Length: 244
View 1: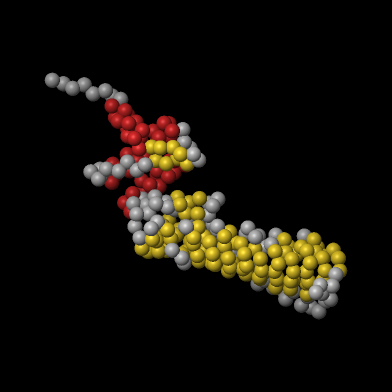
View 2: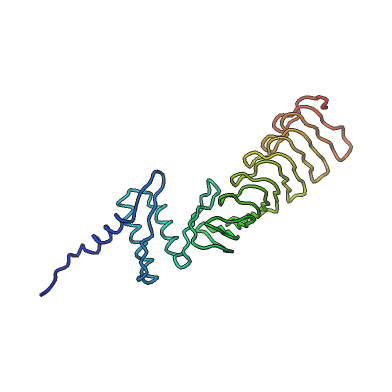
């Protein structure tokens, strides 16, 4: 007796697997790992990627994002990692099934090195960015947060406080050209009250907006020129005024 098998049977089986293992939630598409201990490594990777293709059509989720997540999952299946990187939030979103020292290289080229516990990286930790920046310092819930140091490809360096991955609070920014700024930072910008020491020996102390003299401040000159003390607007001196 011959048993007739429908040519659609493999597709129907995969559709059923996707329906059982895929769920869509607002603003996020999550594809469950279709794990089976009896499957070999290569078969597992093929199964994950096939499921992703079907999930895109079934759920209507973002195909590009989902395929990136699933391809990353398949590539790193051996170490049971499922990591992604949200550049907007500067946050490493995690699902790690092991603790201890580890090094992770992400699909965007960034590399995180540190010690992990319960799915979170402990402080201090290091991030080597694909564009050449290097961060070393504090993390909070897998987000750069607290005191740290960021060095830049052009030789600049920042030491100070970070909030959600951005320079925010008090810090010192040293320019590769020789000058430095010490003072307030707001949302990555040199904004607040601070002091500049320029490479030629000039100085400025006072209010700053987006890296420019703005507000009340005083500039001195290394050559002995009379200081400018008063009100500044977007880097230009506009009014002489004696400051207390």
